[in-house]
Image (cartoon, rainbow, N blue to C red; front, side, top):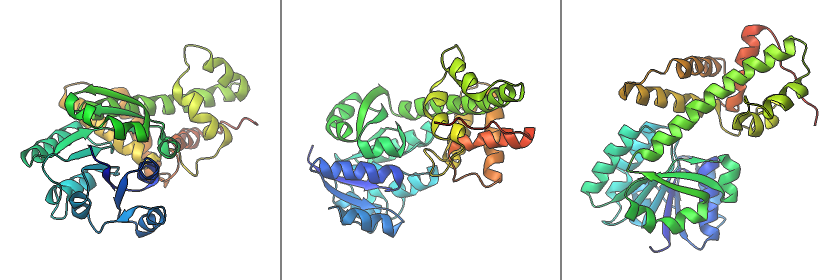
Length: 301
């Protein structure tokens, strides 16, 4: 594969990916609705495109990192979308988190035009995007995955081919649904323990070394909940709300009950309604505090 790459969506995630592509020697074209983001990357060597179509006209592989299903659809299928510009044999790698049904539909429409697609949602946040250490779960044809391995190695550290098209999105939604449940449950048990008279640092220490331990407690809470700091976000509440909603939709389509996840989703929905959407997703814990008229407190570093 040549080193002509495009990036559609250069927010907190896409910007880091684009910069790593530039460092890796790629000729990078970028597009975003945010002109400031484009200007910042052009000063670092990227080329400015006026539309996804222009990205497609100048790229052999395009990475997308976009915040919503409708935006992904427009970027690929719209009148000025990627499929209007990409050549036969080109690749679209969608690093956004959307539902697998939409992913497969986009794949089929791209395939009809000779364009190959991979769904490749990521984990690792803006820090991982900037450092090139993202975990990437890739769905799609194994031959296409192998063809794109080099570009994956530039933006990520742990790259997994997880199955056919849509499998990456399915795994990402399952992961984030579980993370949402863990987050809400942690808020409840920490507040219960503190209100019962247990010191917060002891509570966290014991749970972290017992069967109730989880990744969210070890990696998110020390940076957010336990220091009462939710801005700047590691991953916004709005995005978690979106992802959990997509998981519930997927579960329903599979005929699987999602009672517990639906309860967590309602807490995120309440957080969004009370203007916490742009805060870190763990600020959903503040809903637990507000509903319980209490505070978990903080741990001094």
